[in-house]
Image 1 (cartoon, each protein chain N blue to C red):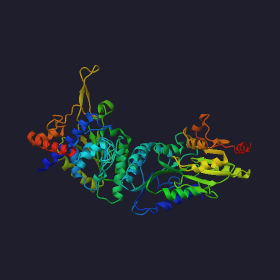
Image 2 (image 1 turned 30 degrees about the vertical axis):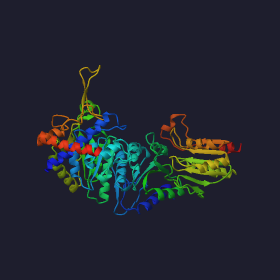
Image 3 (image 1 turned 120 degrees about the horizontal axis):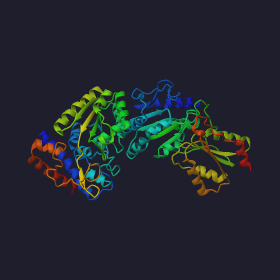
Length: 312
Length: 307
């Protein structure tokens, strides 16, 4: 099953169960239904599905307005870039709501345009930026396990959050991790492998690179622990620090394009407790302006070089 | 008591309560910024009079007159301004975001134009919950310059939502007059282009305001239509600043902070001797002796409340 098909199925299942739910966004039940993300949604008659205007700022306010008066809603958004227009509401409107009692749910569900070919005005890919600015809860969907856990527990539940998916993975087969070793209560730290040789931690939408790394390390008789951080807001990563205390080696993969990266905070916490033998950071290269052009947005990782580095 | 006398007491209560806040403000007692609304009292009372239990009122940073009108008391609001736990919102909101959900004030924004789209969402929530209420949202003439004003009207109309969108036009945005910052906007033509009914209010006659607002509210509810109301209002409290740079004096429009020339001892709480001051209009309607009598009564009640 494709990544986007699984997500569409999980959304369909959740929205069909909730009364008085409003689902809105541009073309959510027209045309391609946002690339299939919102295709064939069906909700109880007490709710509404709205193909909305193109007013991203006001659509954010609209969702918060319903939330204030205890009506739950989901705003499906074509591009994370469009959410830049709604930042006032993410910060200012939400601050008033979260400072008072409220039982409604509001979820903004954007697509992160991270395949690169959309060009320079459709390339904001660091989901953490949006969540960090006002300490908003946010979750990335990267594989079958986190998709099921996050969408079933967070899509419609009291409070506000952003759940982001990756355009780059839309047509890919959904990655099915072999096993889930650990997930914290908040569903934002997932562990999929355990090993003594190295700890791998992925951020933003870099999970597929991490999974590939795990497979290649295995072929080379290296055992690793593998974590994915699905929430960019401050989180308890004691489990990761404990694991690094054991391996003394860490590989961090972050495909975000921002200057402030979430892994800096993790490293700070690790440095407080662990003296590392090896630290490998795999992140974006901004040595030239090519990243502003419509180009393939994949990270180029030399896995063999990393194997050699770990074995040296 | 006649309807006009009753309304006059309510208007005086808001005027005098604000004057008492202003005296404490002049004395440097508040840490938070407060936007007083001298001149807005009559319309605030009229809004309060037309509101039913399920109606929702969405305000701006200049919300004091409406909060006083809805609550009918000063102490909880004053306590909120002092950031005491006994404040109207338990010191969570201060002044610019003060809400009172029990009285239908469920959102108040200090960000220009931010509250329009929130109001659209609230109007939709009333529809989803099949409530009988209506959403009333306020903004200033400065908020017409924000994109969210256009977007929100578009959404109100596209979604067939009822509501009263009220623009308090006091001609000023902080220290600049409309003519100093932009070309004029004909709000009537603007509203018409969206198929929105437009009505202008002016004159500060409380009975007229209430009658007209009641009709508009019913029309909006019956037809699921937004109505745009432009309230011509003068935010009172201006003064003339004289210093070395301005030896002949410079006009300072009141925006926020204490109003230095407004005196709580003024009787009967008059600030400006023309129709822009609701108290002047009431003197014209009831006579100065009646106004003096009523203002003494309200002043005593407020002083008793604040003991």
